[in-house]
Image (cartoon, rainbow, N blue to C red; front, side, top):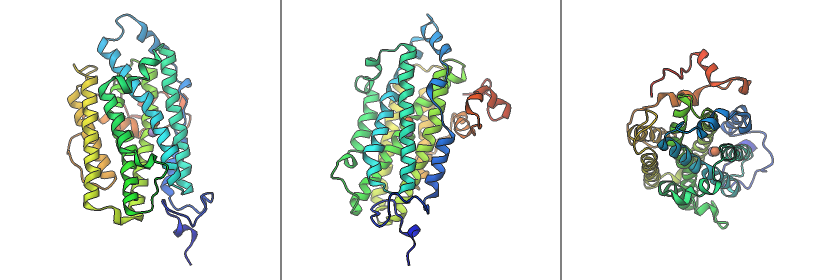
Length: 342
Ligand code: FE
Ligand code: MN
């Protein structure tokens, strides 16, 4: 007799009840759920006084710095709700497995927190919402990234889309890689480096801390997306053909190009000790990690120019999150914000 556990599948699982989460099969989904909960935070708990002072002070920020902050807020403000919509409207319908759905619900909530973060930043800094929320149309390098994701993930948004045939399942994986690996795993990362560079200089520390929390959330989203992709491939090995792997790798490479174009656009002169060339190296480095995570060969062989980024992601959050400030992490010896070299 086949046990319930063995009958569970990620896609096309008509024989099991989507409301029966136990016994659980995909323990990684449960782990990611718990990691998400352990990372709980809300933007209003992060003070922004210093940010407001610096933002409003004449000469507090250079024109280039101000533009870089605005663009990153512009990109993230709409990208976060794009991801939330993807999860709720497209992915959830097809992934009927209850432990994966539990994670998707958690992720959807986190995307709501991220959307809330940019509302809070706009309100507190007194930004023009029409300017910020229209950047996905008015700034070409932001528009190109968003359009790429929307185009690449079109098919599973179609209400008639099903995951019955080999081709359908390939299409589903194609789009999942678009959401999780490219959007959340590549398109957010030049922005993370830029905004966390301010934090390392103790400037715009409220915004920087919020980006740090978002980065930790996103690293879990990415891990879930990669595990989901790998599990679907394992259950449907016929989809993972050399041609299909090539299509996926090409999409990721195109994503890398768009992210590098965005970084060049954000950093025309190099500020904050950052240079667009270093960001290029970094984006290639993380793209290699993403490729390997979904079992594809790496492409670039670039070194990580910002090892401090991995330290931020890897820092274990203390039990009492809001009593643990970044400066206190230093005492653990994990990170030294003042002397770390960019
Ligand atoms: Fe997010
Ligand atoms: Mn996310």
